[in-house]
Image 1 (cartoon, rainbow, N blue to C red):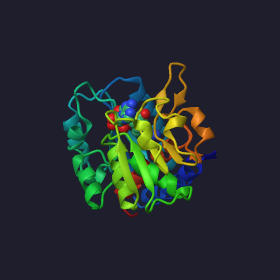
Image 2 (image 1 turned 30 degrees about the vertical axis):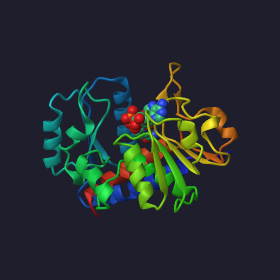
Image 3 (image 1 turned 90 degrees about the vertical axis):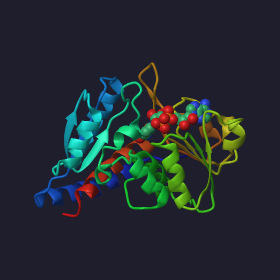
Image 4 (image 1 turned 60 degrees about the horizontal axis):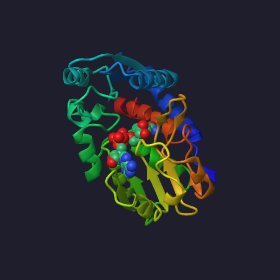
Length: 273
Ligand code: NAD
């Protein structure tokens, strides 16, 4: 099976981002990312740490607001701060909080992870704006590995506002014929096995097995599940490698491209140097 690695592509995106960040800094407007975290959750803390480190490496300054109580107010203040170019609200959120509703307080020009209803509306209508980085990473990874999308039968598993729905729209814009599956889909395998390209973003380790995949299909695994052993695994069972034509690894597939694109969005939001 061909490995759809994201490491090389991520490296290219990071290099271009670092170059632009250096020019912005030299021109007196250093790019700055603000991360807002509302919970003490370990996965949120892990995400904040890894993003801060990645930003630092490409020359983007980071400020982190932790254990924020009034999330909307904090997002509004950062939106009004001329020194901040990109804003990310880390998940998980407190119980009952909804990402899209809170993200409404993020200025769309600074919404580098395309989380707000305004950004998602722009994505659907083809207006300029930031797409959620994970969704964009899926399409960039397929492009990078030369997978043709025009007219292709693509099945997306997952319908979240941050991955499944936006990736569906990005794929439609590329002339793919897209079917979306979710937790209430009847006979998942019969739908997914019709896919020439299968994109899986369900957050269920092992959900996609050999019966779900047509021989030779291109499979992009967006899932990132931390097992009890601490190991990171996707939604696609390892046996799928024996039938698929190509498969993105976890870790090392969509993940590094997502992070690189997020940071690229920050320098884009900071404007031309
Ligand atoms: P989510 O929980 O919001 O959505 C999961 C979706 O999967 C839902 O739409 C649900 O209907 C569907 N689903 C769940 N069980 C299913 C089943 N048995 N059959 C069919 N569909 C099913 O999750 P999310 O935020 O969209 O994230 C999905 C996965 O992608 C997670 O593992 C997450 O960690 C990962 N993720 C990875 C990155 C990255 O950069 N690699 C970024 C964001 C999310």
